[in-house]
Length: 198
Image (cartoon, rainbow, N blue to C red; front, side, top):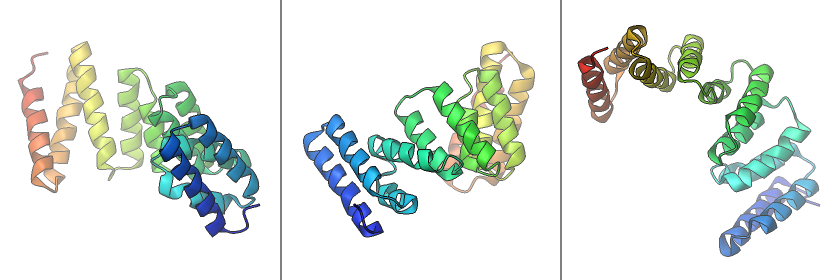
């Protein structure tokens, strides 16, 4: 049995080390399952996997167990959805988990982002990003995603309203851009969009 947070961290680290040496995913999954089984504290399990959150073949299985224990833990649901998204689990599965995270914590911005990303229709995705920007008006990433999706809709559907939304949003982002690279990228996007004939 894992008796402390330090033991849990050491156990997960050992699993990762062995996986990096042998690349055996089945062995990794069995080892992580054993660590989860022997770690009664969910908080310690979360702390143990945190350094490997970007190693999705590690984070995903551990967060599956965390979510089994705490089905309303919005942060854990988001971590699981993110791991699934980045390993190609698909928008239906990820969208369902993001929806559960939103139900558990409607203020969780990451859950809103995943919810918006999982919409398969470009127009629907644009609409979802609009909802995110309404809820989080200072979220520049959401504004950029909305503008990108609006530009896609404008191009694919010859939609002048979507084009106006894209241009207006990029202009707003340009006015608040902090560094030269960001301003350069936004300027290039605006130049391209303003040259389109719908």
